[in-house]
Image (cartoon, rainbow, N blue to C red; front, side, top):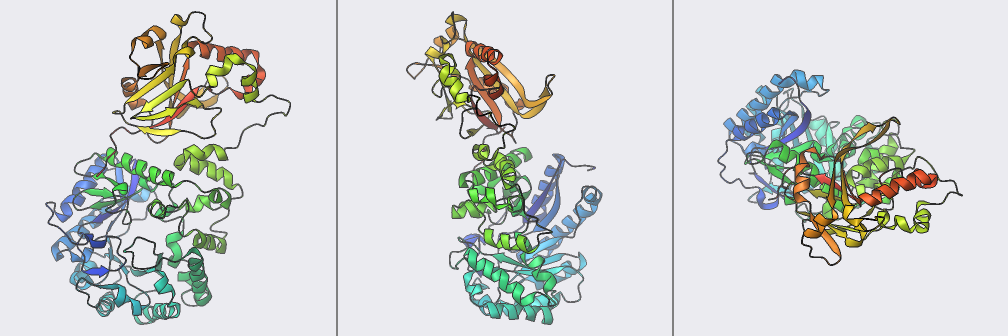
Length: 586
């Protein structure tokens, strides 16, 4: 493959089996492997080929679990060898696009590392292990399936990596129980640095959150900040200065997945049976399930990923604190999975992240115009709120009448701006449409080519501003989410997809289940244009009548104040995300 249109980070889970039973495991009782009809390498090979054929190239393939070291020696070696060959084959394309090509990488609990040490050495597999600090809690929280100790063997297995040039590191998840033994924790970090082959400058802290087994207590934000400050107080200026000011808290910086506007654009987890999820956090959760690589097309999976992450952020809402913060462009409000779990609008490590940014302002400068960043962010994840942060290009002269005042003075404008003339029923949900110029928030919905869409039009609206109602028509305009430059003025506007008119006599012939309203089933009409509608940005659907449209432009000509304030389409509207396929669910 000489090029790619999209690059993604791919976690592969070749087995759900695990040799340990950690009290805060996010997979709970799911860590027992059932017989799979798919071979370990077979699924990964199939998925990668299918992705590449659609112009999607993984820039990183890492092995996760379950526990990777539970694989047989042959499966482990073959899977890692496939990844090594993949990197060699696509190195040129990846490097040309700015990606650093690594080696096969495993995330492991280290307990079964000894079984695969030969393959790790020969294939130069990098190792990221996890353990509990302080050690006094390790055997309480991280034991085998039958409750036996794991720490001694894990330390022995770490020692097997001594002398091997492969990159090796460990990480630890911090809950309140760990925080309460802070001095022990710091001493054990120093112990590993001085008495093992690990360079503890290359080490990661992770902050535990609720729902991970439910037996440990998450840190409060204040405790997270105190933990951060205590690590710096102890290790700044020491031989671990590079770590505490770098890798230790790197997971909470913009380089990680939580710094994405929509992580469904970039991060994916593939299980051996072909199921695709968001990541290890969303693994097994239907709200973060994207489809199956054997059963769904790549475009279906990508569309579902983007939509589900959008919905997760959107349902949580957007905090005004984030709009004023100045660091929104760095944190992007955090992990959508944890926000949904907590029912919060902000990152669960918000205060900790602020501490990190404030400590290194040259690397993480504060935005001096935060509401501008808020507009860009909400336009993507919370479009119904983006109007709150939009900076108008002009301000009205105090002597100029407002649009609302102009409408109040002109009875003939009423139907153009009324919020009860058009009702739109989409898949059984009714939406009362109003003018986009008078909205206090945007209304955006998702439709598919299978959606049922019915429009209800107040009958009297077809007689408004019209001497001969039988000559009047319902006037529908569909605009794309893409923009083009129109006209001599060179103004960039949404591209028009279609205009459709339905005359009054035709409307009157259709059955209606709502008194006082004509009913027009426009499902088939929208289906015709579904391929022209955008999926990543909202399309715009407007409604008026031919007579009202004519009067709007007549008012434009006669009233400069109206022209200035109503130069964009003022008609009743709704915005649509078009998903080409039915939404994938479990």
